[in-house]
Amino acid sequence: TYRYFKIKTNDKVNTSIMLLQAPIISLLACLVFKEVSLSVLFIMAVSAVWFGSTNAAREIVGELPIYKRERMYNLKLIPYIFSKITVLSFFSIIQSFVFIYILYFYYGDSDFDIFFNNPFSSFIWMSFLTISSTFLGLLLSAIFDTSEKVLAVVPIVLIPQIMLAGLVAKIGSKTVEFVSYMTFTRWGIEGFGNIQGDIVTDNPLNKTADAVELLKNSFHVSYSDHFNSSGTLSLDFMAIFFLVLIMFISLYLILKGKDSI
Image (cartoon, rainbow, N blue to C red; front, side):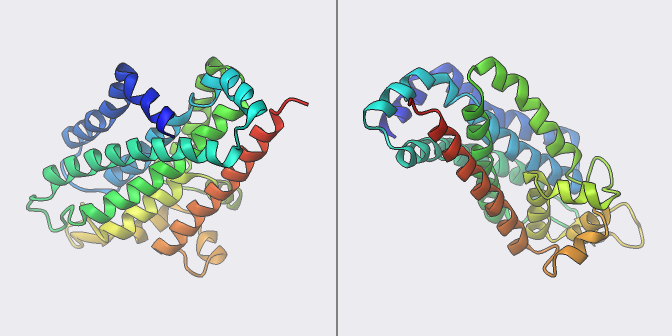
């Protein structure tokens, strides 16, 4: 873990680019959106998944020869995986903090009916979502044998995260609804909706509306049938945790499969 942390901090150019993503995207969001809306929550969720997955996408494949050599000597899989998670989580937390509090400074003192009024909970949730997405990036990094292949696949993996979140297009079938359960953004944006509570709407008769209820209108009606606790933060947390567990097991088995006979 210490060695990996030193490698990341010594690579000042790439690490700086990684950390600069958060303020650039959050400032751009402030320029585009004049008030807190579902679109802002969507950007928060997508950015979290983007940060976590891209931070980790090249971290295993880039050192594959070293990994194989040390694995033949005395390297254990669990410490190796958690060394990656620990260091990448540190940078993910920094990214989440900068991202959320830039939004808070912009939206927090607004005169709208609904403020960006829970920055700490949003920061915790974004950190959790970003760290969870790190497992996705590490899994991709373990599957392929060159960095070029990983970078080519990352957009293919991230674009469904955007399409299936329920904001770009309404989820119109049970099949698509079920597939959306396999994405971080689907649960991430609902978690942000639970934290924010209400949002400003354009309806003059109803200036505010429950964010989660608006989101559920974008999901298929089968969502409420599948889960008694649909629309709750606890379900969002358990769904993401379940995805992380699947990715962790898959990551372990794939790395195990790289062992020399």
